[in-house]
Amino acid sequence: MEGKRNYETIIVGCGIAGASVAHFLTERGMTDILILEREDQPGYHATGRSAAVLVELDLVPSVLELKTLGAAFLRRPPDGFSQNPLLKESGILTIFQESMWEIIEQMVPRMEELGASVKLLTPPEVVSMMPVVSPKNFDGAVYLPEDGHIDVHELLWSYLRHAKNNGAELCCGVEVKGIDVSKGRCCGVITNAGEFKARWVINSAGAWSGKIGKLAGATPIELTPFRRTIITFAAPLDLEVKDWPLTADLTNQLYFAPESAGLLASPMDEDAMEPCDARPDDLVIAMTIDRMERLTPRLVPKSLRNKWAGLRTFAPDQVFVVGEDPMVKGFFWLAGQGGAGIETSPAVGRIAAELIIDGHTDLMDAQTLAPSRFAED
Image (cartoon, rainbow, N blue to C red; front, side, top):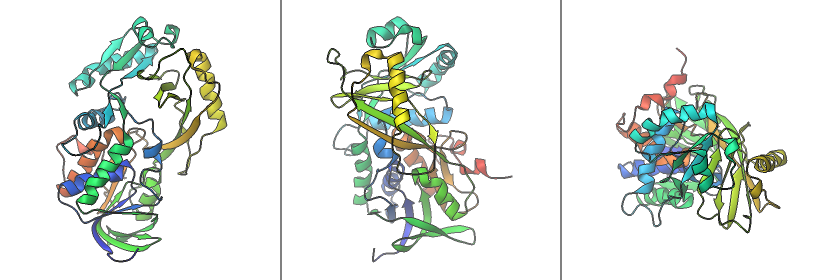
């Protein structure tokens, strides 16, 4: 890279988090932005390997709030934001056994207060909708009729198109090797393409966010990547599956959904590992088939069409990490989105932009997300 070396803001990582904050910053008039992506294309890791769904259900209150805030944008994006619809309201069906079912029932009023459309279903009602599940395996279900499949490619590139049209620059194939800190303030990055100066450095590096934080000498936050595996396969010839909702059994750890001309399934695995280009494990795939044989025997595939894995990165308390670091000024965390980064990106990107430009946000209580909660007293 040659030419300009000084920017107002540098964004490290161009998955959905980095793309969304770039969009919302440029929308607010901060256009002197450089987005650095280590891979050859944006969205290569977690963003490109998700199940790509909006699910307005979460046991973590702040994540539930962010999901419902993101949902409003996905259903009704601003005029001209995207060229195609962002959300197909195909529905989300989540089934539970007794102990968890009681917790979920108590959550419904809060979900409705936040704007989610929620229906509680009995086992017979579930079976009438999804005849491949057995009522002996669950005690009730939550059906979210207005949730469903997100067009991740459309969302990601709409963020980037608007950001670039407003002046942001995107450089792929550039890896951050160090963070330049002087007198307690972050002032740039050191990369394989040289050094770049900036007043703000946004850490949106996904599974690598913890490592970027250490390069800056920022607050030590133990961000842990967990592998999640998905398989795809042909649907049984006697079943019409294309209009099925994504169906998740949280108690027995399995979900399945329509995918292209067939189905996908995941054992909802969470194997902690170092940041990497995640690959599916044969034992995890065998576990998926075993759970399907037990829970949805009619769907057990004869062969697989595809298999992949991605990393979902969590903070110790499962809450997102969004805000300026208390130890290194100008270093801004946008990390720990777990498996909810895509559906929450319209809210999280806006919150991050408002915190950077205004120093506060009215969208939600940003203190619940602040990295300062991990700072030592």
